[in-house]
Image (cartoon, helix red, strand yellow):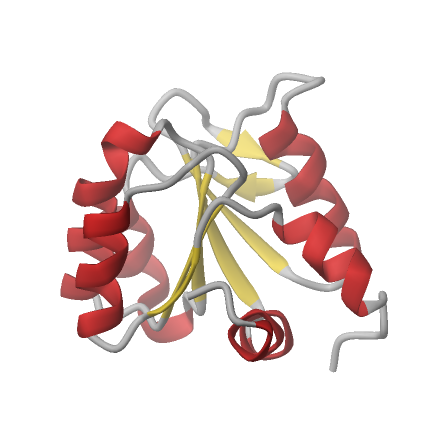
Length: 142
């Protein structure tokens, strides 16, 4: 977890990112980070039961609903929810066979992250995907 090669693999091989807790409210980190990632070529899939659409994409009420609609096209789940929600999210990621999980800064749950890794999910925890993507350089996405 959080190894440089894991971070690199996630950033290079994820194209469609389901963002749990993506808000449409200006000033929210989830919106700013996701908007920047979208501008770099990543498809952002909002998962928020209180939103209808965010960043021009239909919002889904749950990861299950997004997965039903998109299937195996979700490459990564990026989490902007409180740490107490992580175990349930991890169980969904494992059950839905989503290969990658990113827990944003200040979002962590050691036990749940260990479950994910044991199930073969690549995990990054308590890091900002935008900061790591910027540190890796904003090369064009294929």
